[in-house]
Image (cartoon, rainbow, N blue to C red):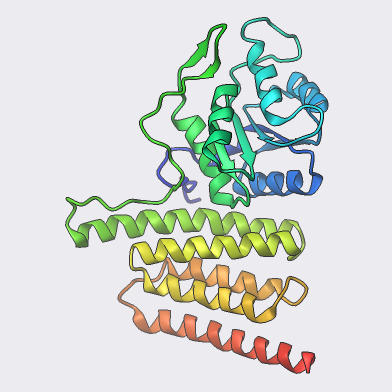
Length: 309
């Protein structure tokens, strides 16, 4: 049996994730389930979903989760108030809150600096912007597990130390100016492919768990492919770039989730994962895989056009 694949740029393995218990709080049930599906597909062992803060506090008491993902905007008690309630238990113990230091990841559609600052002041550990991808959610788990910050308890502020050297939004590799180009490329391509593999495997498991592509899954697939193409461009991985372009082209040609074939999407994902195991010198094999995909997309697009006419 092969060793579990480590997540990109960290020592957190799927075994570590399998032991985690995560609470997801979002008043929009569809979004909450989508986050839960991403986490489960990424390997998280226990995921509990609540759509209101009061119920979430009961789950907090019953399950004592390792990490909380909380939506910023909710009726009655929003994500900031919920986080302050959890942190306040460090000053005045509350039997419903067994661990006031539990890491909280805020999920929000607002990326303004004021929103981020308010989240930090409330005691939030990390911030995820909607619309999210598997990598953006899983990378926040990596950060809170791998880079825990000292916990501050005072009347003025309760929460993780707000001082940090750098904000981390991108989990892929960055080029160092002093690295020789050929060495940098080899290292970065390997790390980039690891990042891509983790995200694509999670995406494939989600598609299968949800029994196909609905609108939300198609949108997420499109975003993941855009990120994959960006990463491939960064390290000049033309083979992976070409395959992602094929899938993006297919989705564009189909025009919507009702017309997209989940099998075609999975074939592209499998092809990318296969190509990452092909020796870069074997240009002929890579060409065959990509050409077959492109022909399939062409055929499906023409078939769709014929039906529309």
